Image 1 (tube, rainbow, N blue to C red):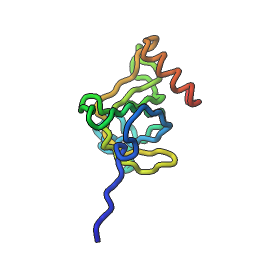
Image 2 (image 1 turned 90 degrees about the vertical axis):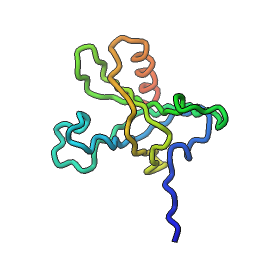
Image 3 (image 1 turned 135 degrees about the horizontal axis):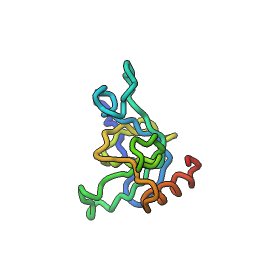
Length: 135
């Protein structure tokens, strides 16, 4: 019997610009040494974030690895004084779709950071989160 291939974000979004409320499970947070799972001894589930996923998937023939990343914004406790309470993470479209309603993904983030207080990037992210009632 042939196993059904797991659906990815790339299967879910063929092309175009999209914004979704989403739950993102951080696969990296399963490791205790990772900061995102700090103070969660015995947590085998890892960390799941709730926020706004922003996708701008180019058409197949115009796609490049560099642009083929989804962006995710969510509220997060600041670490340093200059940090805002919004974090940004990005990841590829091969993220596994766990659930479509509500959209829930499982992935490892490529990069991310807290947005600086008062920056243009912070104001744009805050407006985006406000638009969906998260901020």
